[in-house]
Image (cartoon, rainbow, N blue to C red; front, top):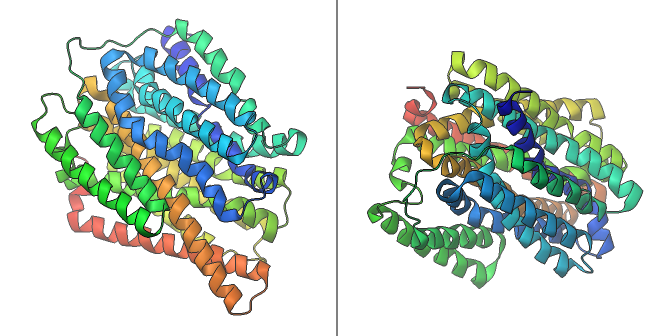
Length: 452
C-alpha cells in the first residue's frame, strides 16, 4: 500500500465514526421506550448533536486550515471517543442529550479536518477521485449503521450503538501517527469575532427551527441579527472565516441550497422510516435497520460513479442528475402505504440513495474548486454545514409535518395505524413539493447547473 493510500485509509477509518451515527436511528424506538418518550421527543436526540456540530463546523474547518488538519482531526477523535462513552453510560435522557452535545463538538473537529487531510495525501489532479472515495466511505458508514444498529439493539440494547464506536475512535487516534501532516501557510490570522458570530447565527437558526412560540421567534430574531453582523464583519476582515461574496453568484449559491434540500429529503427516511417499517411494514428492529441500509449502500455506489463520470459529464451536470433522482425517490416515498412491499420500498430507497451519492461528490467538488487550496478545511466544512442544515431542518419540520398529518387523520376518525401512514405520506409529499419548487427556481439562473 502506498503512503497516500495508507493515509487515506486511516482518515476514512477515523471518519466513519460520524456516519455510523445512523445506527442511532435504528435505536429510536428502543430509546423512546426506555425513557417513556413520545415519538416527537426523539427529535432532540438529533438536534442536540446537530445544532452543536453545525455551529462549529465552519469554525473547525478554519481552525484546521490554520493549525493543521492532522492535529484537529486527532482532537475530533479524542472528543468523540469520550462522547460515545458518555452517551452509552447516560443514566437519563437529559444526560444522553448532554453527551450528544459533546459528540457534536468532536464530530465538528473530525469532519472539519478530515476531507482536507485526505486530499493532502494526493496531488490536486486526484481531487475528484479522493472526494469520491471519501464520500463512498461515508455512505458505507451510513449504510452499515442501521444494520449494525438493529443487530446491537436486538442483542445488547440501545446503549451499544454508542459504546461500539469507542474502540474505533481510539484505534484511529493511535494510527494517526502514520498520516503525514498537510502543509499550512504560516502567519494567517484567525477571525475570532467572525467565528463567534457565525456560531451564534447557525446555532440560533437551528434552534429557531425547532422551538415554537416566543422562544422560537426570539431565536429567529437573534439569528437574523447575528447573520447581519457576521456579513458586515466578514466584508471588512482581512482573513474572513468565509467569503460571503461567493454566495452572490448563483453558480455557487444554488448548489449549496440544493445540498440543503437534498439532505432534508434524504434524512426524512432515517427519521420516520424506522417507525414506518416497524408499525406499518411489520419488520423487527434488525429488519428495519437492514432496509434503512439500502439507501446509503446505493449512495456509496453513486459516489463511486460520480468520481468516474464527473470529469467527462461535468460536476454540475452530475449534481443536477443526483438532485432529480433524489426528487423521484422522495415523491415515490410519499405514496407508500400498508400494501407497499419490502422490495418496492428497497427500490425506492436505492433510487434516492443513488441520487444522493451522485450529488454529494459533484457538489463537494464544485465547492472545493471555488475556494483557494489553503481554505480546503473551510470548503469541506461548508459542504458539511449545508448537509447539516438539511438534516436539522428535517428533524424539526418533518416531525411537525408528520404530527400535523397524523393529527388531522385521527381527527377524521382514522385508526392509529392508518393515521400514522397518512402523516407519513403528508410529510414526504410536502418535502417533494419543496424540492420541486427549488429545482424550478434554480433554472431561472441556468448557469447554476453549467460547468464553466
